[in-house]
Image: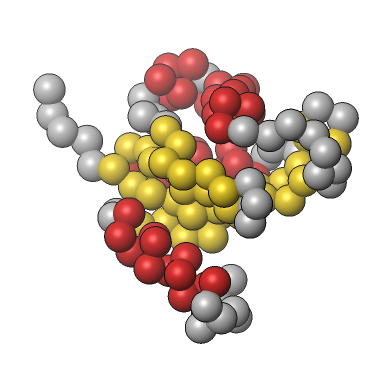
Length: 118
């Protein structure tokens, strides 16, 4: 079996009602449902989707997936609009081949160095 290269995606999310329960399990189910709805089960099984990190306090997270499914993942994130009865949006910010570059970019955003980059 050939090794598939991984990509990492930094995203931010906005949740209309903050009191709704939100965790990694709920997020991964939302994303899987969106991918399977728009691209089918076969494509969903080939994504290798995984949540690396989720920070509900600062509303960001990092996803890992196979490099061939990058466009499908990004478009599926944009198609998610609701979580339970509340409006919910995911915004992809940066894609990289290494987790180190994503973390560096995130630190620069949090320190105010890249406020106008997205």
